[in-house]
Length: 566
Ligand SMILES: [Zn+2]
Ligand SMILES: [Zn+2]
Image 1 (cartoon, rainbow, N blue to C red):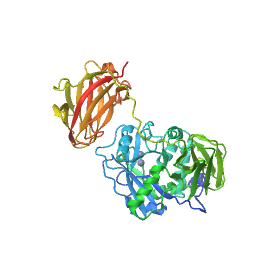
Image 2: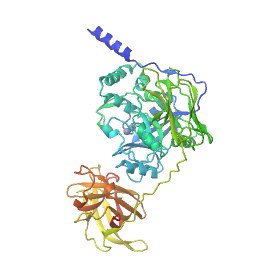
Image 3: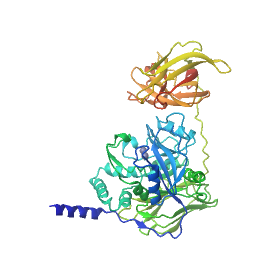
């Protein structure tokens, strides 16, 4: 009986064993710098120390690694440093209510980053960081990205955590059997087993719609933890059982990002960090699934009357366009060219070919797929070449029609209509003061969140609105705090709350919150606030963006309800 079972298991493994990794001839090295982005260390839910991670990256032949432990952005990132010949970057993966966002190259935030995705994207940009949407197409609801309108900088188009989850969540028995086969073949061919789980991303339609309008970098994310936790949730502490699977070195042999840098690395960590970050920000990059074949060599250019450009770059339309691909892909691999979400006709198996397309705007990218039966594995994914009038990315101010009617919420001298609420452990107070050179009256609101673990601490400054807000569609105010922070502006009925957070500086800034732009704070009966039933307007400091134990002062001048002219 045992012998029969063993024979059956052996036959099953043999029938599903992924093909052995191909070592490719590299007749013309493409001089790209290989590295890996999105790695967790023991600082959050990963298994290894930065030293162990660097050693694994060196073993896999990588030149840089970006460690992205979970955090709220308030920690000063460690300066880049060489370990074992691998340039190690410190970065952070931030949890938002709309998915996970990785911030590279960012200065420390004065307050915890969190809450709505659009606010975190905004904050990362303000702090000088470069933000990557992590695992946007994860089958797990709380890991999937949900805010496609936010101006994020980059998208992960491959993620190894998503790859195995897609199989585990698959509805067909074939997908689950496939995953079981990979677990069995893992000890024999680790990188091949993980690589064969990678499938085409499901976010190319979203990418295409967005990249038509703006520069949007695509990157692979290893999401390497060197552990798989059963019952693993967003909170790493919830993993009670874990296995060191896949190991860091296996993850790093499975997938890499290759950067085309402006100059060769110098060996000086500070200088090299600038060289690498410039290439990442520019999208001078391609993703490679090394577990199928390596080392890759790849170049993709577009030429028209204006010249020749590489991936990540923009060129104006000018006459017919020649797309040129050169790679060391084996002949049974398939190269396809894409304009946005549309594949150009024709499969290519040559290592060097050109295709001419008619004049016009386009976003062109190349993808090379592995050989059958693993043709679903995208072995190589390029960033796009943008053919269009260069997009100058200046923030476009929102069109606000000057409001017509307004209702002053503060009479300039008394606290009539204003109160403060807080949880039983925190402190809050409000008084009327004169501020600035003009001695303008303001509401000075004092808050002190109690210390300890975040557990619902809040302090709220509240304006009574006994008649609802039916004659207005927004609240406008001037606000300043002692230091940069986020304040949540909310509407409350007898049962529910809706909110929109605003960034507050250490100097006076005008703020406007449209009621239509508010989202439910917790479960609500309706998506939008029922304006006739609103009973109060709240300014709230809570643990979403303020650390427990923090106290401070906020000045609010001229709070008014306004409406668009009829
Ligand atoms: Zn994540
Ligand atoms: Zn992660």
